[in-house]
Length: 457
Ligand SMILES: [Zn+2]
Image (cartoon, rainbow, N blue to C red; front, side, top):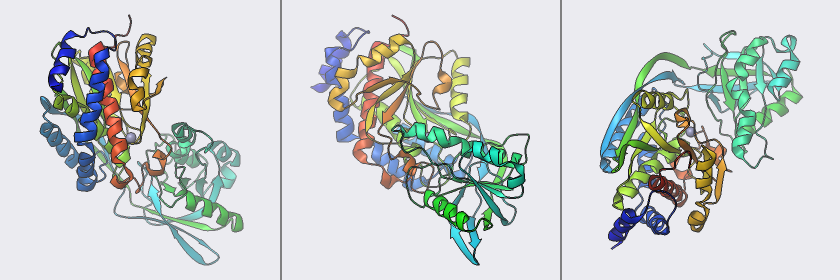
């Protein structure tokens, strides 16, 4: 019965604006995802069967195979792999940190930052603390040379948007080691980028400047950073010990995983939905970004299960290596341009599998007005936030004058508690929140497919 209703709506509805029948279809999408959703089970497979999967690693290879099989099982028309050149960096078998003060050695958990060099044996040195890169520069070479720089900058808890708080502290992780090395530091430790008070260190990408010595860099948990700071006030000559066994290898080939449902009217025009398949090499990459992966796959699965025949070709893309260079996103966009593929829209979920709130978008004024008109249609599902703003790292390279780029907005208050740490595991994901995000994305994909979301009237 529902199937025929649906057919009727898709036959009679013109291509432009949200229609009365759309509310029925959106309800059906939510029903399908909430009653028969597979994304939570897929996430369990990915997190518990494979676990973390840094680009270039053997686990990432397994995740690519898993992704292709899962898309085939979901019944997509076409499933294929797109080669992508990715870096290969390993943390090494072990890593450790400690400090000695008043004759006592105090061990603390540590995580090398992604891309760091190793310490070639134990690195032991005195510590100089700075609360920001500006403060570091003011300390100057005479106080820094020969020491380990401790960048103890917290994410701003007063910012309601935790992404902005992350952005505000990001520089200590990305540039801290090289800025410290400029003044003769021998190592760099940072306070983890998190709002949680716990003992999980959080890793993440760092970059070395070409013009300075590469020194090892690692993160301490928020609690250990606070305790080290207190210990330094009591004993400014305490000695810190760092053991990292990181290594870098030549770049290698891995793959974006791509699945499609062919469009019935405009098969050469694409609506892409995706997330990144790689994760950092600790934890299970559950919120970042296993959730985005399984939600994207669920979008196509649910629409297909409802018997919906898309007008445009719907693509699900599992991008490889968002975390350490965005090679998957760059390669996907470059090849799309080379092949003359027209992307009318792309949607990314990479903010964690939390309760969805709405969508941010990069596009024209006309496309933004189109998005805002969805408010009443999506109100019953508590989807209220429609703002202009960042979409997602993987899809950003698709930006041009035509495409509308969307990011799923979620309640991100807890995201950085888990992000890039051993605490980002399957158990931290709530099934219902995950499914609601998937349903919201599927509804948006359906509405875009119906309207074509033109750039101009
Ligand atoms: Zn991510």
